Amino acid sequence: MRRLILVLALASAALATAVSSAQKIKPAAKVGLTTRVFHPTTPRNWRGAEKQELRCVIWYPAADNTVETHQLIGTPNAPEFEAGMAAEHAGFATTTGKFPLVLLSHGSGGSAEQMAWLGTALARAGYIAVAVDHPGNNSHEPYTREGFALWWERATDLSQVLDAMLADETFGPRIDPAKVVAAGYSLGGYTVLELGGAQTDINEFFDFCRAGSQTSTNKTEARRSDVDTSVCRVPEKYGLGNVDDILHAVHKTSAISLAASGDSYEDVRIKAIFAIAPAVGFTLAPETLQNFIVPVEIVVGKADRIATPRDNADYLRSQIRGTRETVLPAVTHYTFLDTCTAEGKAKLGIYCADEVDRDAIHTQVSAMAVKFFDHALHTK
Image (cartoon, one colour):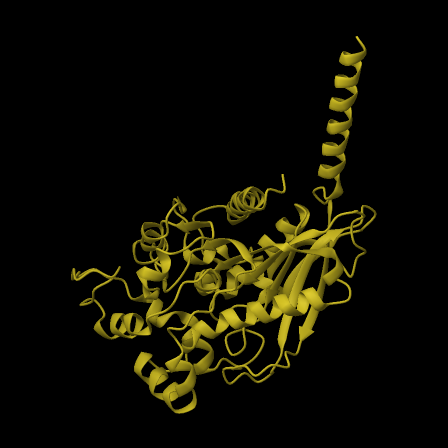
């Protein structure tokens, strides 16, 4: 009997310890929102950006008594996008543990705020999420040719944001440095794959765009007559010229960066990668994808004509062992932007045109990301 009591006591103690550990970081009922502007001191390529800084938006688990408000993007009297519910500069959730961190990378020509739908959901699930405006390639300042052409440099933005977040007096002590992951949309999907060790062959892109329908893709010699080259002329590039114009310009200003385009930008601190509608995936060298050790999950829309699944998500899944790819019916490339307001739908055309419920897709994909990261980090 005494032995049975001892066994039961030990089991109860173990259960109490497990429950206590699980409760250290629980899903947040509320979300806090703030910004940071980081100024790295190490030499870096700013890609001709007007502002030489890394501007970030941060979502985080907030205290239970936080009062959230509806967040909007655009001019105050005519906002174009909804950005979820959050409270600016709210107090942190009470916890005895540290939070995992998610680095977020926006699409070409977008902004950190366009990751709000995902950042908010991640914060509500117990993560700190930080998105950065990529220099020369964000909607808050004039676009530059270098910002569009030197995509491999985007990975350095995320690595330096990670450095800065860990050093930040408010966030640093609350981040678990062993639990850092990354998620990106469109060119951001490519960017986070770079952090995992993928390396670029830019000739694939320029050959693809010059040849148009007469090109080889997915690293094969097969020629196709129906290749869609929308990625070469996305609306955000308006006014910057064609592919050869851009390449000619950046050759004059960025020869060193172009020479380093095939280098590795791997950051070994990244433990998992979630890529949403990844673009220019076909430019990533297969031998570097085949050596991936970081878990990867990909989601893409079947109706995506900017980052077509077969040239991007399908190719990446075929090269990275163990990668799960989810293809969502009727979802387009821009479905993964924040939800549009009535004003946005009236003004922004393709960016707001959906045949699906955008909010429902965001909810589905956010849940996928949380589940994937929880599993990869063993947090649940």
